[in-house]
Length: 115
Length: 111
Image (spheres, chains in turn cyan, orange):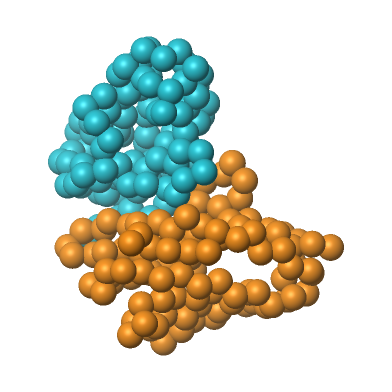
C-alpha cells in the first residue's frame, strides 16, 4: 500500500514567486495534516482537514498560505507570494478515523528554499 | 511555556550504553503520546506509542507519568543505527487529532 506522497520533494524559488505543494494521503484516511519545520525549530502544526473540511487551521502563519482539499482526497498548500522565512520542510501526514490514538503517517516532506 | 518540552541534546553515547530521554507536556487533558524517530533529512516515523502501563519493544521502553505530566524513552544496548532525533509527540485529543511535537532530542551513538 502506498504511503503518504508529497510533490515536489525539493523546490527552490525566488522571493515573491508562488509555490504549490501537493500531498496524496494514504487511501481511506480522512484526516490530512500539514506541518512545517523551519531551520532549527520544532515541527509545527499548520492545519488539519477532515475529509474536505478544514477542521483546524490555527497554525497557518498568515494569509499568504492557502490549503485546499477538494473532494477529500489529495491536498495542496500554496504559498503566494513566498518570503525568505517560508523556507523549510513541509510535511504532510494522514491518519484514519477520529480516534486520538490512531497513528499519524508522514510523507517524506517537501523541502522549500526561498532565495 | 511550550506545550511539549524536550532536552534537544545532543546525547553522545558509546555503543552498548543505555540512554534515557524525558519529555514534559503542559496540557493535562492530553490523551495520547508517542515517540517518533526522525533521521537526518527524512520524515518522522512512529517508534512507539506510550501507554500508562508502560510498554516495551525490544531494546526500547516507553513510560508515561500522568501525575507529573512526562513521558520517557529508554534505549538499552545502543546501536550505531539508533543515531537519530527522537521526537516526543502529544495528542490533545478532544474529538479530533491534533498533535504537538517537541523540538526533538538528538542522539549520536559513537563506536
